[in-house]
Structures are given as structure tokens and as C-alpha cells.
Length: 296
Image (tube, rainbow, N blue to C red; front, top):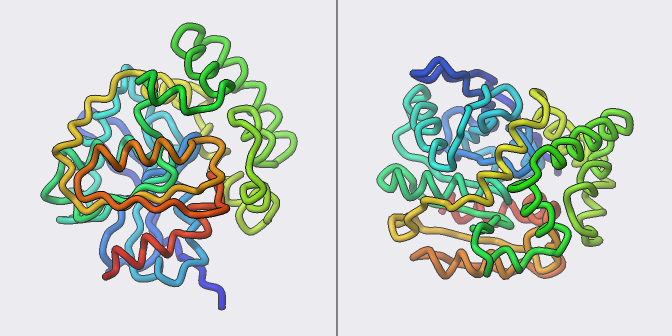
């Protein structure tokens, strides 16, 4: 039996500075709140990836666009921990007292920052194929050589990466195919990932998320790459929420060793290595594993 996660709202928060912060809500408006952090490059549209999950119907899933992505205003000189103020404003507007955090890939650093800054409100932290602190050489070296070159180049030659992004965007616009831009920024994908990208039920959502992510052009994503490669000011000892990390054994974008490293940094963390899953396939095929744990 198929289940479709219903979008229940699309709105925005106006921050004290006047900056617009866009979000979408999915699922049950009366359920426990899950704050969802999209991957990179991605957007709040990724929240609908859980549309076939029966368990997702129990929760109020709130997915937002990070600054410079989608419909959220660009923030000059943005830092990783700026996300805390944005999420705090969001939950205050929505009158949410406590919440669960769920992140995929490049959304994970932000979820960890919120968990560390708001320990009394974060009931659980859940990371799928999480990106680690790649500003550290010992973590960066776990990535493919191609990814290492990209991340080093963005620090010293951002104009070149901007050109690559613009070229990839043009390719994406003409092909309407998620894979056309994915291949620009990743190593060879696993067979599980190719299967997902070739499935119209998911490739359309991923394509929509990607197009929404670049609504304002490449500046937001380019800024985010710089954030990833700059020292994170996250105090892992302040993360006290029960934490779950899932990683696919065939993830060729963020290797499982990165997830294992994070699991060693966070107290009360359970790490699960999922056989035969890649970077894109893991969140789609195993989201219920996270949601069942949250529901208990």
C-alpha cells in the first residue's frame, strides 16, 4: 500500500533583521515536530521524499530552505551556527516547545549545531549519511580525490567553482535530469543510487529540490561549500539528545568512515551501517528506521 505525505503549509518567517526564512510543512499538523535539514545541494522540497512512508504520517515534518537556497534570503558572511537563530525563530513562530532533528548529508552539521545550542528542546538527533568536519585533514582525506579537489578549490578559487555550478545549472535546465548535476559534484555513484535516480517517483522530487535550491543562483550553495570547509564551532559535548546515525556501506559521496567518526564524538550515539545502500538510496529506503525509533 502506498502512502503520500501531504504538504500542509508553505510559509515564511520574518527574522528580526527582516530576512525571509522559508519553510514547508508535511504530514500530520498535530503530530510531534520533526525539523528536517535538507542535504547539499538541496532544499525544503526534499521533505516530500518521505511521501511513501507510513510512519511519516504520524509527524509534523517541517523542512526549511537554508539562507541563499530556495526562497530563503541570502545572508552575507553566513556562519554555520547562524542556523540556530533561524531555527529558534521558526519554532517560536510555530509555537513548538520540543522537537526531533532529522538531517541528511550536508544538513547534518546544522542539525548538530542546533542540538548543541538547544539541548533542552531537542528530543533526538537523527543523521543519515552525515557530512563530517571536512575542514580537518583527517576527515577530508576520507573523501574521494575529486571531492577533495573541489573543496580545496572553493577555498582559493571560488570563481572557478561558480563557473562550474553555472555550467551544471544550464545542463540541468536543459535535461531536467537530477543526474546531470549530481555527476558534476560527486564521484561515481553506487548501483543503489543509480536505481533511485532512475526511478521517476524519486528523481522528480530530487530534480524539483535541486531546481528550488538554485532559485537565487549559485551564491548560496557556493557560500555553503565555504562553510563546510571552515572550522565548525560545534561543542559536541553539549549534544545530549539520543542520537542515531545511519550510513550506507556503498556511499561513495560521504564514506561510512565519516559517520563512524561522528558517532565517536557524540555521547549516546548509535551507529548503524546499512548494507548495499548508497548516498541517495539510504534516506529514501530507510527513513522508517529513524521514524520508528522516534515514535517509540
